[in-house]
Length: 114
Image (cartoon, rainbow, N blue to C red):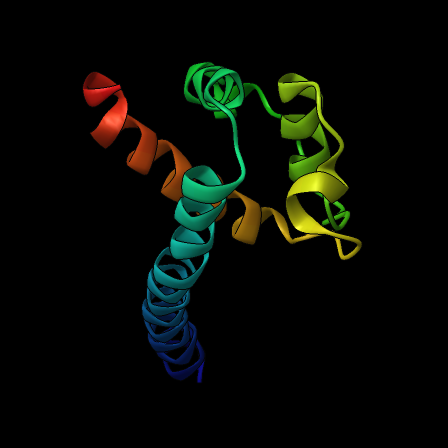
């Protein structure tokens, strides 16, 4: 019986890892495009320079999954209100990470042309 339970746990973990990877890929695509749109149409040069220098590893831990925590932290680093970027609805940290990655990727791509 123990072997059957361990096998079930292993197969479940493998399936969930795959599901997580698929979810993150979708977030990167959709939220990254939203970040690119923000960078291209709303953000100013100074905000994008600051965003590119942010060390996301230093962001506060969000173990309790507080909506908008990462977005609020980044907005504070940029010296703007998070609502200016995301509106009234605070994004999840996963959404915010993908959003900012899209903006940073875009800025990195075009910065030398400015």
